[in-house]
Image (cartoon, rainbow over all chains, first blue to last red; front, side, top):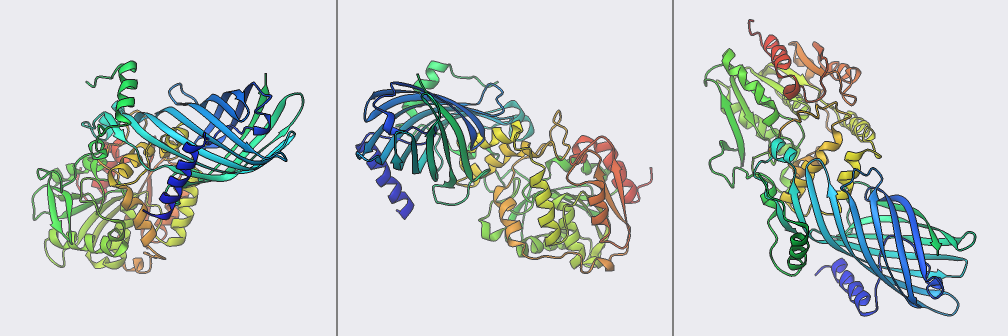
Length: 222
Length: 322
């Protein structure tokens, strides 16, 4: 077993043993007690250019649960990722601490050549300062497609391979994301959030397309 | 006809598949190579097995057709098999690691092997060691033909080059930068492919080849490709596409082109925004004698989008009487 894989398993074990976390919208655990209902809107680049809406419900500190929907910036109706999340915080009285999130995601990716529907897992941890008016944290996230239903399109069959098999296919490697995430309270009960960093393969190598992510968002407490 | 599972059954199957070994092999998404399908026409030479076809009568003047890429295959160039009717012996092959030819690990997809491959195939089919053979090269294939001409100018008769990208490393770097710059980051094709890239990672040959096929639509618009009649291909060789440029080093395939004094025909597609007319004229300037002819209304896929017009130009250059 190589070192990245061992580290990954340790992170996974930690995430599963102590209720979870991962990517997407930036939450401030300092508000988990009072923010009973929170909605999030964000945009940026994470794989494709994307738009994101989310909802988070506080179960009472240190737990929240929620859901998010991500859409590519150029939607044509068939591309989406729908994820359910659970997040738990570990905060000291002065606001230092960590927050761990786990997501289960269902995604559909439609291209001219293929339609793929997959189920995946996202895990992540943020560690840093989480104050009442601002937060700043380092984040490490991992995502992996577990199983996919792959349906080559008629164009693929005509242009390339007529006998391509539609069906379930196993997962490939996952991705790591390493970066920073933070937020600033603006006015009322809204918060401006940002997360940005680099995306690496599970072997810590390069990735196809953009090797970085950056998302700007706004949280509103209802 | 391909049946689609219902949504509830799909969800149930997802749940079951997450915990069982019900998943397929990604090799089922790309065609079999000559190592997997013995019925495919092939030739064992130069330490590998190529998917290779010939048309016409052996003993006639030989025309070698070189496909693009690196990593594409000759399927879209098969209209050139009609040259057999004009009295030529026409040879097509999928280059090392591409199309239906044998797959190779990255380190075997290097410049040395590629040069040895073309030398071995030319020697195999040429009528004699001094026979002057002809090339029709498309894109990377036009670069490959120029490379061979630079090494063996005395062996080359007629030369038809359709939109080569570069003949020297500096030109290649510039070409790649322009090519990458032409991609529309806010375009649907790019974002579709970027989204799909999170689903399937290129962990082995079959996955990488399938990924490359899915991503191939990104380049359609800047190259002016005909989206209504897309260029057919069998298998894009992702390893060849990645590894050969990496191993090419600081090459310069123009050092001996002054020795080649015959007229070279460059074919250019009007709609191509990457291989522009000016770019092709700069490529043609490396040869002592060359002309650039533009085919109107087509892009980089001129051989499949305008087969008659392209074939007519090739025939005229090869001296076929109308």
